[in-house]
Image (cartoon, rainbow, N blue to C red; front, side):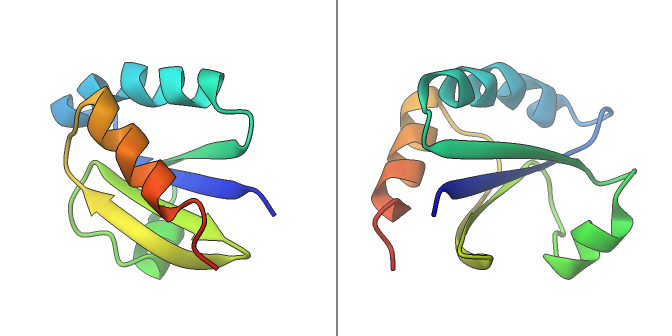
Amino acid sequence: MPLTLLKFWAPWCRPCQNMAPIIEKIDAEDDLLIVQNVNIDDNPNVRQEYNIRSIPAFVLVKDRKEIARKVGSGTYSEMKEFINEHRRVQ
């Protein structure tokens, strides 16, 4: 089962805008990762379901279960490390 990264963001969020090219690059490089962008303004139910209180927020999901989350901005290397360290979680 592939790993899914839910990226919670909003168009008015400057840190979210700064993270966009980083996440796009990771998405383009990683064939085993599915990235889903969740605009919190357009998807309040999903925001509530995942209890998102601050953005940008990144939730890793495997087999329909949350396995990890990271809130706030990060570098390309930090995001790759976050994803890779949770890739083998069962």
